[in-house]
Image (cartoon, rainbow, N blue to C red; front, side, top):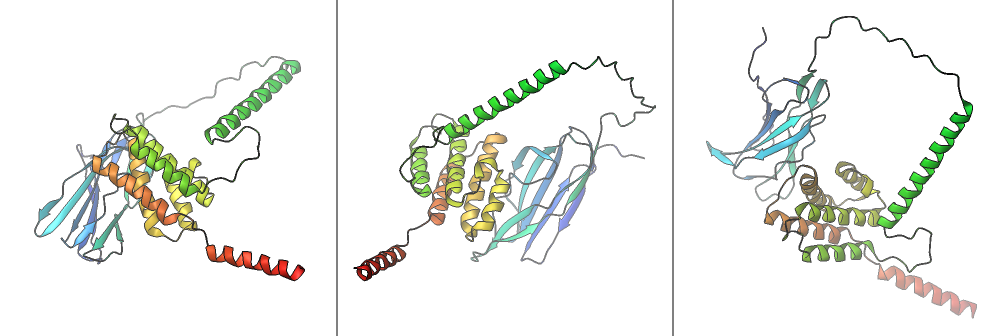
Length: 323
């Protein structure tokens, strides 16, 4: 007999990684398509454990985060309990698994960032009309008129023209957005990407977007500045990637994990503002700007004067030998 009400599934982890435990749960294991259910993560740890900010934009697989609530930390039996609740939903039927979510933390004065993961949870998503009995028969095909090749040729030509015009408009708009002329022109060498990015960050910092309540515009501009810098610095097509794809590509080219961590925090905050209507506090604004400046300063390319001097010496010796 099927039970009515909420059926709670709880999967707990108690790993031997210091005095920290993580627990994940859902309020029921079955749902109808489009329903909203609650997925919760609880972290219990000793006071000498410092948990990084709980993942507000966590990857929950097939499920979309509709809303979330970060609870204030509580103390119980000498432990600190931190909790975040997600309201999630999906519009696909079947059996899906919420993947493990990594919780990042440090121990006491140790600066090494460790992580502990939740257990995956499985949810069955049913259709609104699960019982559809009866045989479904194909309808009879309509009578096709005699082919008119002239109209077919005109249709193909029209489609090709529309496609060419669309591609042309896309190229023009893209080059205009990138600040490039439609046709190649002889121009001065481009400025270093970090100079352009730092200048844009200073201008954004001095703007009145936050003062006038344009928070989404502020974080959209901040995200675009960082992505344009990454494209110029690493030749990664960051403007066309998701945050996860961009970070994965950076991990292959950069060894500075702390710099990438700064970019991850800024990008996830910007994504929440742009797509989840998240309203950060003033301290979050300041931290996002500070992390953006630090990321660019840590990853900027520096000139190597010793190599330049050596190159000039080689040229001078070659000229003396020719004389």
